[in-house]
Length: 318
Image 1 (cartoon, rainbow, N blue to C red):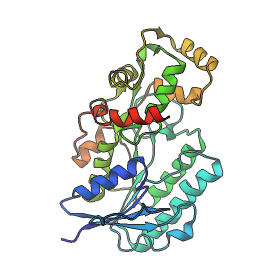
Image 2 (image 1 turned 90 degrees about the vertical axis):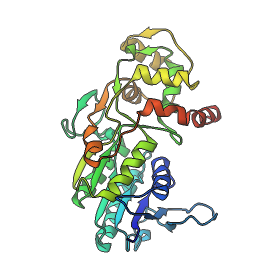
Image 3 (image 1 turned 180 degrees about the vertical axis):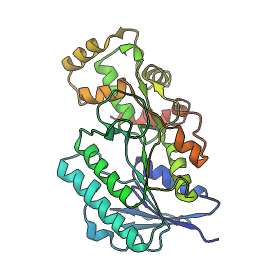
Image 4 (image 1 turned 45 degrees about the horizontal axis):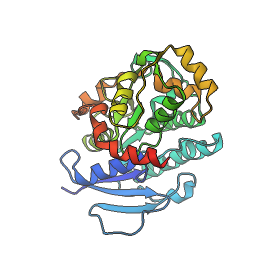
């Protein structure tokens, strides 16, 4: 049986690079995998990697995507713009996604896996909600345009994944943000009671590769894609402290006291981002793991030991 031919976007990013590694060392639905990785700039030349080829393309330039999906069986679309102006986000997350999906349609691609984010639900708090149990209400330009990209993907028959917080080597947002916020608000935040949907990048990558190969579930559909068991903010912060990534604290401040301190101490993290990391943002995620038969893994806090050394280097450099 010939290999499953995958077109992968975002292959040089945080999630995409782990998906690429997972795909190249594994199998999907009993088949070997060959990957055509789309990137604005391919990595420097190195030893040939069996099953991997690179193709140049830029989602902000739809004309550069012509022909990129030819002969592909599956499109795994992970690339997105996660910051910037509304116009810059729209160029990549909407217009670029539309152009890529058009290429997939023309090439007869049979399956599309599209990565979105639980941030499309907006500020919350959210407590154990199922998909679309509350209407999406994105706030940032990135989330607004990623929701628009979701809709295009669903129209094309995609399986759309909405993970919550993603941890692991390569994470340049979640743990660095928690580190800054702990320094500005040196206490347990509202008792650390907030429940969060979290997933380790290695487990998310396994799920994505499984979806690419099994054809189950069929699209169009949206699924939450965090670990099925939510993590309390207190447990997350304790694990990071135990790993030497955060300084310990003993104070326990109510939420309003935390907000007052945040306002008094300047930094890059906003109150909205503080709330996202400290208060309930928990989305029911067990269904996708059950349907695919993909084990969810031991959980993101257990996995932290695997990425702690990377985080220490990154936080020290920052």
